[in-house]
Image (cartoon, rainbow, N blue to C red; front, side, top):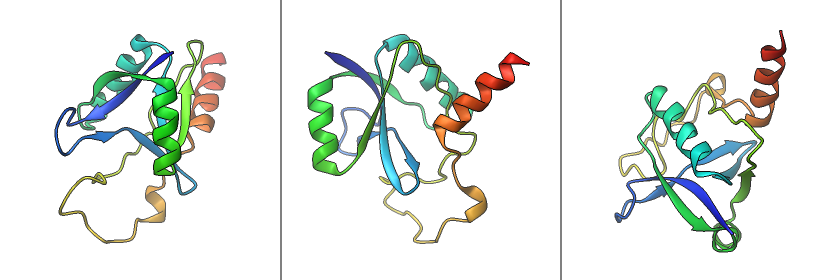
Length: 125
C-alpha cells in the first residue's frame, strides 16, 4: 500500500522528510490520500514554511526507514483532518549552519493530536 509524505529538497543530496517533534520524539507524518498531503503542504506554505513536495512511498518501506532511523510514524487516515502546528522550527536539521543554541521553552510546538481535537471542538461552537 502506498502513502504520501512531504519532502524538502526532493531528489537532491540535501533531501529531508517532514516530521513533527512531540515530547522529544521525531514523528514522520504520512497521509493515506494524496489530496490530504497536498492540502497539508499548502497549509505549511501559508505559514511561510519551506515549500514541500508531495511524494508517494511504499508504506512498508517507510516503516522500515522509521525503524532504522529511530523515528515514529503517524499515518493520517482519510477521515482525519490534520493541521500543522502554529509554530515551526526556525532552522531545519539539514541546515549546515545550524545554531547550537538551546530552544526557548516558549517556542515549544503544540501536540498535533491535541491541536486537531481543539480545532474540532472549536468548530462545534
